[in-house]
Image (cartoon, rainbow, N blue to C red; front, side, top):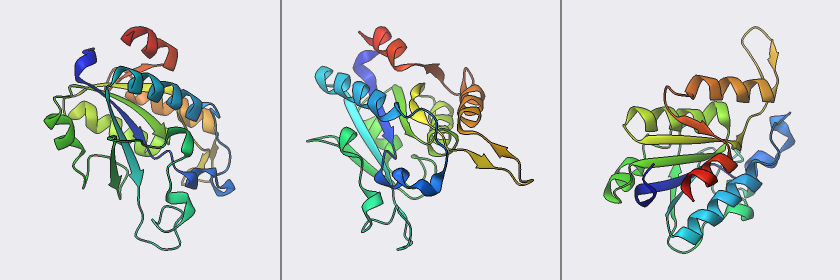
Length: 185
């Protein structure tokens, strides 16, 4: 892990996910852990990139004029930190994320954010496929429970764990916040 060529990519930590409509969620400490990572990155002067999901649908929580579009204060961008908006699950599709990483000489991408089986997973897969040394921080992301096409419900913790398992050693190295902090200190 090259500390000089490392970026923290924080995905979709937006107020929209506070809504009860999402149902059961695991890891209520995800935002606190993201904040710890963000504090470390800022102290070290490393590159931070915020990803913000944006919908074109005015009734969506992620519509720019709705409160849910805002990034949660705990991890809100400051100063020169880059904010990239996206309209699909992947932070790379329809955005300049790959170019920003390349132009800044970034070879290592550390990913945190919401939600594990959706935008976090999709971005992690693409990061690995694009050749970045990718780390996903398991306790700095979270999932919501979901029902499948047959009506079977899968709890948030199960979805979170399975999502991490499908990414581990295939697309990314999975670490906890503490493991990553120890690795980069």
